Image (cartoon, rainbow, N blue to C red):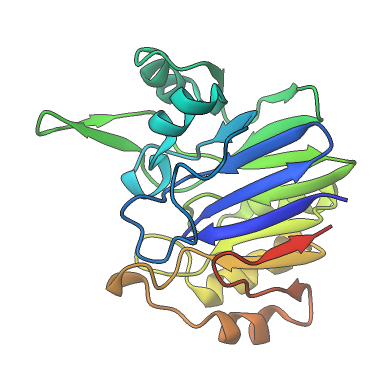
Length: 227
């Protein structure tokens, strides 16, 4: 049985057979984070959906400390390689087999950039992740708006979907409920809300909207689900 622990915003810790990993580890500077970047002594992978500070977060410091391999889109991976990190560079639609299972990069409608020396540098397109562990699939959408490409995920028989609901920069709760209709996951966890004033949202309201189609699980930072 694998475990997903919500760490706040869009950050998660995943542990299963052959894998200990983080998704989008925005921990330092995150007012809702349940832990700091120093907590995990052993990590195999860090999955980074895009380069914005609230997703790239503490990736560099954590990867240096643990030796974790960063999985990201090609240009972002090259940027991180330039900082001395180990990476797996991919692109949307690509799928790789790793020691624990398979990983596929999925489309996301958003942006991706880093700020260096006062300049904004484009860091490739954003993505989501379809991660297979112990024979079950997790879909971490990253930052995205609603898109018809999500309907293709219904064939993947997603066990757990992690969907943003905060609006403003990403889907709101209404569109996230429509995404559930397209994806048909067994369990859905709403994320990317309440961290900042601009993304206030009602996860319980989302759960009501999506509840007829999925098991909506509203997790507080630090809480886990097992699947």
